[in-house]
Amino acid sequence: MLDVRRLRVLQYLATHGTVAAAAQALYLTAPAISQQLAALEREVGMPVVEKQGRTLRLTPVGELLVSHAEIVLSDLAAAESALEAIRGGGHGIVRVAAFASAARTLVAPIWRRILEADEGADVSLELELVEQEPGAALESLRRRDVDVAVVHGYTVLPRDFPSGCEETKLLEEPVLLALHPDHATRMGIGPGDTVDLARLSESPWLTPGPETSCYEMIQRACGAAGFVPAIRSRSNDFSVLAALVAAGAGAALLPRMTLPDATSGPVSLHPLLHPVTRTVYAVSRTGTSRRPDIRHLGDLLRQAAGAETGVKQASHA
Image (cartoon, rainbow, N blue to C red; front, side):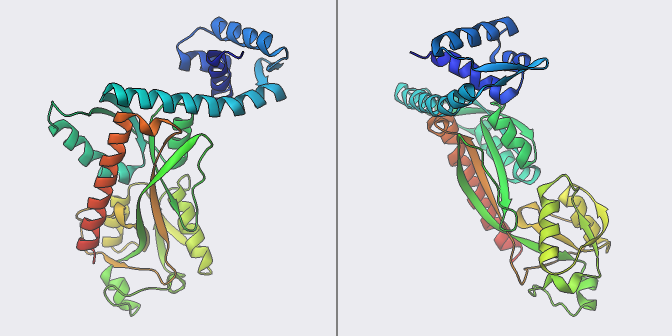
């Protein structure tokens, strides 16, 4: 019979790439990892890893075992979560990776609620947060560096989720065109008017950096309108982009949740003729969403998402 602990070691090797990295993640020594792999090969009767230069790679047998290990370990995680719920264990430290605007508008309010929660509550939480772009956050989740990843995808740039994960939709929000009011007036665009992006083909643009999915979203949205945006400034801080719009530096596409509560000047916001929508998800490893602390965090995230959607709709209607 296969030893589940050795399957876990093989899975960590596949995830982290090297014996040293797998050992660090599992809090074991490199020789201990090698011993576990050797014992697994004796159980299987075939090699599960082979040398490639100075590193190890999975054999076809090893890849087969990893694919089954994902299922087995997910089922075990689900069983552990169910047992934890039955035991009534409601306290836990949940590690969260979230992109910047979600960290600001969803996680920060939750943190305040957690700190103010009744000490006698059935479920209590401690949070650890790292700000990461969605791709990096999902990689952290896959590597088990975090428990929950808050990520996004766009209608023009859907998000792919790794195997062994389950996602929950938190909210959908429009991407809005942001212009200085004088810029809008010169183009004959009235307050709140729906705008065809093709009209902005000659305008200067303000975008995040090319390493972000938001940058790719803007490239695709403008490309669908028939032009490549002439980028004048880049910043991954959307409040900076909003301030630059208010200064008259150019046009920007801003997901509604990224809008700051106040800008340093006037900004005119417009829906798009061909709408682009951003969807925000909470993602966890399969089976762990039933863990009481992670389930409670999911509930709080959904509540925060509902409150944020209502506030933004009211303030930017």
